[in-house]
Amino acid sequence: MRSVLLAALVPAVFVPGVAHAEPVSGISAAVPPVGVAQAAPVSGIASAPVAGVASFSMTDILGTYGFGRAATIGAAGEAAGVWSAPTTHTGFGGEDLVITYTPSFSPAATERTVYTARYNEVTYPQAECERVGADGVAKHVWVSYRCRSGIAPSYTLLVR
Image (cartoon, rainbow, N blue to C red; front, side, top):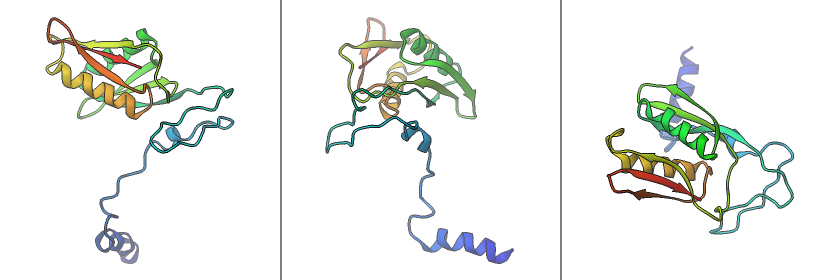
């Protein structure tokens, strides 16, 4: 028993970086389904699906948002046609928004409105808009985003 415990502790104590390594997550999200090929990325350019190959959908967590906000964001994104089947899972720090989407590697020709973070519904609407936008880029739900301010201090998420 002691040898097993020591074998687990020694690398964490004596090998730099092992104790602080991030857990591997999203491996299944990064690997396309069997039969779907993708072009190799060129330095500084995002990779794009190979022409003639069918696109694929994937289900993944978009991010963790305030209580009640994940459902609002999920419903708005589904209504906008950006993703489908949004679900939420409650945790200690908020709600996880899980969505099904088709990964995007090139910008759309036109901007699409995803949702509006209203000042009377969320404490920091600009921060929420920026976070959802950045989470979408990180997961390849969209390629780029911007948060547009309206008359009131509300922010609308526009994506490509």
